[in-house]
Image 1 (cartoon, rainbow, N blue to C red):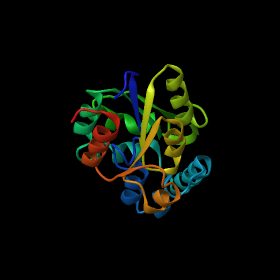
Image 2 (cartoon, helix red, strand yellow; image 1 turned 60 degrees about the vertical axis):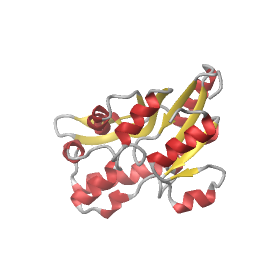
Image 3 (tube, one colour; image 1 turned 90 degrees about the vertical axis):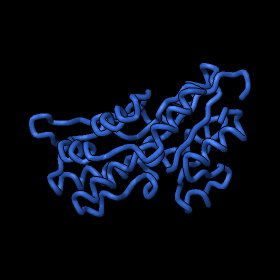
Image 4 (cartoon, rainbow, N blue to C red; image 1 turned 180 degrees about the horizontal axis):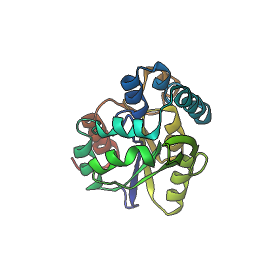
Length: 208
């Protein structure tokens, strides 16, 4: 690692926790909810489809909360995150929503997370809309961190992570689909936390 302070930016779903929407789809049997940013690159298009399906099926925030309460971080995620935080600053940059993710973030030890929020009618728990913190927030967060003189490493698995991988000093795929790795061969691919740790140690000066 060079003398410049390093900060690691990680995606959340698919990297540290399971995909929340996929878990909801499995619980409800609604296949349309299995679509993620791995399938649809345009986030607004994806969220519009999701909200439409929620409305059609009468699903509310409580349904999400019930699903999330049964979920745990991916196996090994907590130990990997603790190892990473022992060496550099870490921020999770996610396109998830606070109202969904906070129970799982607590299970990870409450790392810093920048994400979005929901517009909810708390009388009925109906999800009315989603509120983006800002457009292209992952790229803009990396730009801001570089402006603070951090060396930025970004790690993600999906199309919505590409902007932060492109903007960072180094971007790394973690358990990506075959399709995205073929489309973006410039990013090294790691398939588990041991591979990711080894890559960081071998290429970026991290301690084992």
